[in-house]
Figure (cartoon, rainbow, N blue to C red):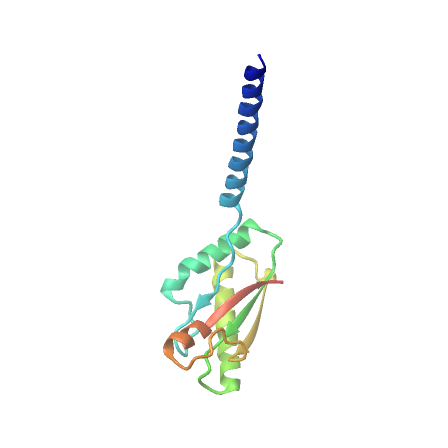
Length: 141
């Protein structure tokens, strides 16, 4: 009898752990995706075709979180004057905002700022690095 009771307790404990693991796994797979940066071609501010999927995912995240407000930060590579890059970064941020608004996100939830070339994520002087710096970052407000 002791052996049977011990087995029943052990089986019950295993079942409880399995349910907890399943719930945790389900929570991880259903947790919202993060908003991702988008990247631009040299001296351009239109959302590239290969970045449209990222923008749609970003819109989906915002639609799932109706109270979330964001700041879109426009960035550029090191080439060009500071003044020119501030203006280009501004156009990039506004372009991304317009794209999200066209996907149904209220413009009131989105603000923009340009950092020009002041916030590089890569500081090497080559195209691979410059490409990483030509971006819009999306930050929670």
